[in-house]
Image 1 (cartoon, rainbow, N blue to C red):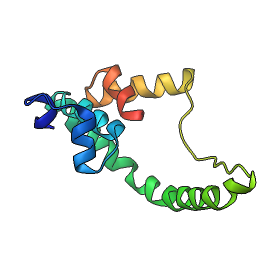
Image 2 (cartoon, rainbow, N blue to C red; image 1 turned 180 degrees about the vertical axis):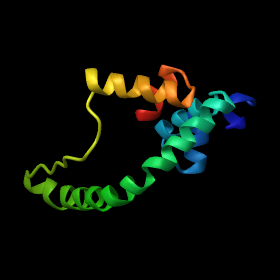
Image 3 (cartoon, rainbow, N blue to C red; image 1 turned 90 degrees about the horizontal axis):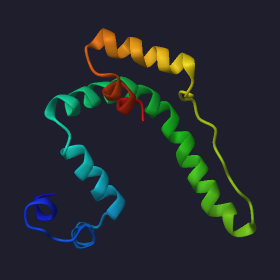
Image 4 (cartoon, helix red, strand yellow; image 1 turned 180 degrees about the horizontal axis):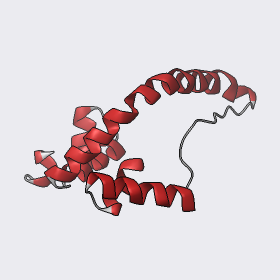
Length: 113
């Protein structure tokens, strides 16, 4: 990241050298520009959802494999996964979570994404 931020190298050049996508590098850069407190809060919230991701992950893997195998034959493969839906109930839950944890509403919303 220092190559991009401090040395002025192009994101595409650094991403190619590291063997990652430019999207990944931009996402990483966005994470590192957040304050340490926000990064810590996001990490704590991510730890809470890791068990769910472990259960959902195999389903995503299967979907990807099927999509690669069946795509050339004109078959589209989709997956429906558990998750939150934006609306009044979710807004109220996020506001309550932000208040209970002492973080801003924006921080609580960013952690849900």
